[in-house]
Length: 613
Image 1 (tube, helix red, strand yellow):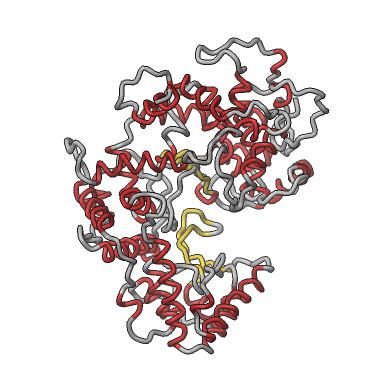
Image 2 (cartoon, rainbow, N blue to C red):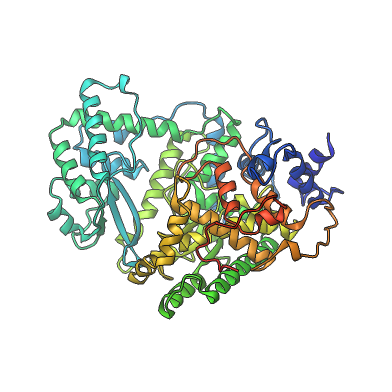
């Protein structure tokens, strides 16, 4: 075993193993092993940083998932220390689900109530939604109101995109229906929808083409009163035309179409053993389907460094926020006092959550009651899976039927990611919250023993990227409480804000807001670590004990870039990884100086919030 492999093994096993390897030395070994010294960092930092990365290795997220699955499998198989156990009912329920998943090797069978009898399409669609299947004819979700981030509402809109069904397996009638549905989505996707806020009674009057009473009775299992539900509809024209389109189809053909879509969903949701073992696949499947239970168990029985990690994470986040406040002191954007107050209030109000969990004072009874009605079996995975999805939908919709229920963001947020759990940090505008999933808080992303130059260049960038999502062209519209604001819209129209938007689009991008988060986040992390106006030419270099060749700024850039080493799969709503690295660095004024790039041209990069120093 090589010294680098030994070092990485010690890091993965720590703090359980007592390894005589310094984690920062191991980090430098990994950095050097990936470097391609035949390429120039000035010409292509990504190629220089990742040129020797091997596609035979797992990428960073796969490595983290493998480590997570190994640790959780020990807990869920009952081989951990039970002393001081809490939330015993929840733990047993999750263990039963895990046991049934591991022994199951069959395709998921559809619930009997979804495939029996002849149901009108709204009733059938409501039942599918009850079991987690969304976005077939329409997309229905529970979220916060447009102008009141504390109030729950139902959001109705057309599907984001339809699954690509194998047309050859469909009858001519269903092929025609599928084409018409896709064309209807394309037609209305070209329009900028106007959001309508109605009661259920008003929805019935405004879009009578759809039997909403039938739909919501099937979904909620009760008949809601006309004034009990609040709905927000963003695609009124689409829904009206959808109702007319489906009224002219036979019940039999619509049920068959829904069954095919349900079957497609079940195949995607079934744990896939193509890449990983069944145990590993079940663990990752359960992270998505049973997020609260899996988060709680990981936090209680696996995660040993939460206290130190929380402290360091808050230090980094506080430093980023302090640096952004310094940006606002310079007021590069030339904002009015009122606009500056708006931005400062939002910045001060951002919540940082480590793990999507309730606060630490929440008792085990809360977790036990969360899954009290699930009744999972150790031998029937089919039953368990559909019950888990049904429970999830019921819990999402429960506040809608509780008079006066308001959102409590400090407790728990049940999202709609039923096919795959989130591995990377994310920002939610309506909650003004930055959440770092627990799975992310491990090697190779983070370790509390790493030197701060590594922590700021990776975790600092990640937090900076997500934080700056709150201040790009979409995020700026939401105020400190998560409500859209006219002042935010006014700020977005400021000449310097618009100039920055145009600047970062000098080269094509798949997502303007993601590019802004990359550019602004890297600048923020760099300045938080080195200080605003840092100049490497005037920096008196004192080498670290673990590294004598590379300068601190060079380490910062290389560690940032190596976060993106990988197989370069097609990106969704992001630029390719090499583009992300090189564009973000090209907009960091100090980069060329840090690497002593020859024939440095005058800096023409983009700076939105960062002061020109």
